[in-house]
Length: 194
Image (cartoon, rainbow, N blue to C red; front, side, top):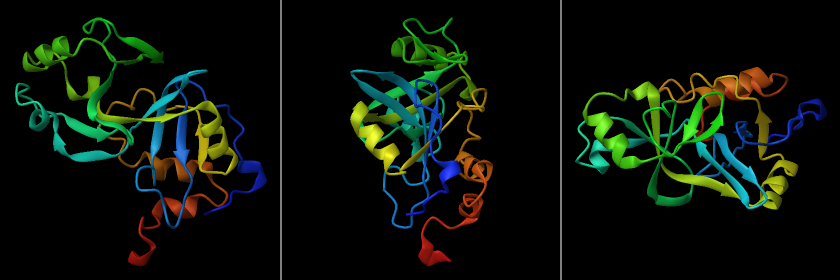
């Protein structure tokens, strides 16, 4: 595993609205390799987030035939992958939404979402769907941070988090971290491809 210089070690505290950027790893974790996770809940009961940069090979209408629009579905994480979750920026349209940070909301009434999508009142840049989520107990995440599995960063891209332009955010974050990280931004995920 890549070991960052001392000055690049985690200096930000993980909290709701921050991003977890997975550290470069030659072997890699199937779920979290090259992942960027938006933390949506952070309290004594645990930590929840969603991987924002890993689209799956099917669309929402393939999962739910009653929905007539093609919205990308993302791998949210390894927990509860048989459940659908969503983040959005339209709480005025979706009852029971929970504010994460900077105009990003989690959840709400899915029947309303389904109806609004079919009426073309929700656009792809307004909402992002996930199968599963990423979850930790506080001590578990701290151990992973201590072992340099993650770098905590601010979410400077909050206006873009829900867009379909986030596929390359991990590479972008590697370049921004600089000093030893930028080489990973263009390295192949599987080193044998090099």
